[in-house]
Image 1 (tube, rainbow, N blue to C red):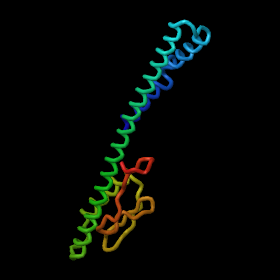
Image 2: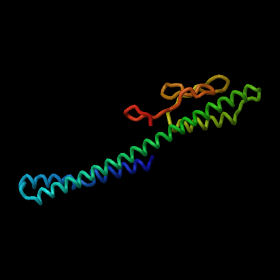
Image 3: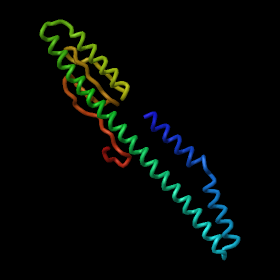
Length: 166
């Protein structure tokens, strides 16, 4: 993710503020044409400078698309990781409940491992954890229950602004 921030910063510096000369050259060419519209070389210079500016905008668009696709991929990967952790926690809940129901006392190692998974998950998404039955925990994300005991009842998903899934 840090690399993407670096890329975005470089693109904005290079093309948005770093080189206003290309835009200025187009305006200068328009001024030259408005003063002398009959000269072919003046009109050709305007077309050339406008083409150069158009090419720069096209390049910026392509680079921003690349950055957006990288962000989408990164976000999808993190959501997949979070869903895998939710599944791990539900499995650990099941193991803890079974172990402690068998009269073996507290399953401290399993509880510690589940706690580490909860901490790992909390680095990816804000979670609310509540005690469930027989040593299990329940997890909610944004008020929506995602783990209840040994079941993942809902997973996390990513969507594009138009509502389509990533």
